[in-house]
Length: 288
Length: 288
Image 1 (tube, each protein chain N blue to C red):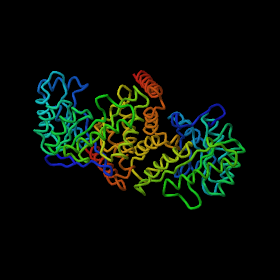
Image 2 (image 1 turned 90 degrees about the vertical axis):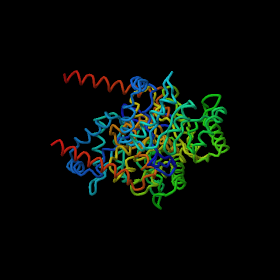
Image 3 (image 1 turned 135 degrees about the vertical axis):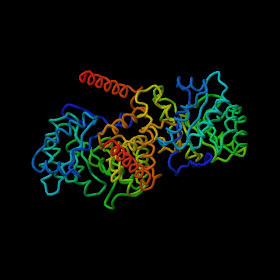
Image 4 (image 1 turned 180 degrees about the horizontal axis):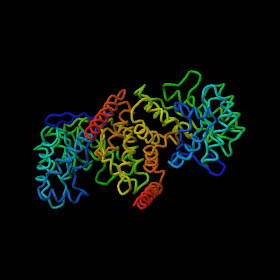
């Protein structure tokens, strides 16, 4: 269960999938990174609003720019997003000071992205998560890098869940990232991820989240690939993703929700369809 | 392995998915049924060509119209399709005389759709399939109807494969239909189908094919639902489907092929993308 000041989002195996908008991240977005360096946050606000309108349940906020005071920047970005939308936020950084700063200004119950199964990271980040009563994403890798086999990723996941317990964080407040690598670099990459997801579901039963767009990196028509990947991962047991809110991706997730029995009798699906029809009718009337 | 006069299509777990175009079927197509009654076959030819152009590897041909001489009509339709395209054909009928007539005019190695696990059907259809050296689709239901559990569907599948063996038909020439029901009538329908697919893959290791569009019957935006369903079914082990060749569905299948490692390094995916770009460029040049 994640919260903003005014909104609650629950993630779970029997619930509709939790879409976390990936866009507020300067990695690979040169113009956006320049704006952030210049203290210009209008794109942060418009990206937040656009993603929620497109169907995001939460938004990820990442302030990772080289040679920038990341804690300070993350605070400013979080304040902007909290003013713009009421969706809960995923505070995304590999820098502990930034996570700490982010949690200090976050209003609600945050999702912290991320810890790994590395001893040092676990000892640094879990106390912080526990102190703030937050939820944490744990990446299924450790000191030795990204495990090639589902079994080894499961072991990393198990270690994270166990360490979290030692810090008083319940299994339901740990979300495992089973790791999605690009299929363009390894034809087995997605199969490994899918097998990891079902293994973790069967063995640990915890929530899972991954950076879904990684699978299509470097390939043409990425949204179509991502839209095909998400239903597979959902059927295997994935319960949330940091992902693009492109229409084809969001619709694919909502279709998979219905197909997997998480939108009984298609109430949400049919409701969304009718809302779209009504909007089109209004637009047509306005244009004539 | 299926064949037309001039083309061979192989279906298998390590190969790209086999798309069988569903459109040449008068069920629910009133105007088309009227044309067929009147001996007018131009739509049959254009539907065959359009489906192959849209990406179908094979085409299904069904002549089921009430009070029509189905064997005669099926022969005429098959002749039309064989002239129009070189894709192998799935001869689709519940009437044994129609299957027999169809096989007598088919040039190549046909796919016969379908037998069930009912004793009488097995004894009628399997000798015919064996005599023609054809491949057969076996529906995982029997005298008691459509089993609700994956385990019972597996038992039906096992019975069909075994009976086929008794008639000299090898397991690789039997394709099991794990049965896709509409999720609009039962929220568990798709989960049951997916579990059946993985069970049959693990226990029997045979090829599978289903009528994929059934899942979305009665719901809005059927193509989007079908496009989300197919990757899930493919990840579970489905190797072919009788399906719509709408662009969103075909692209979803080809994306899933790539994601599952059946299009190594994305050679087909990237090739199709470049071909589309070249066509768009030509069209733009022609328009200017």
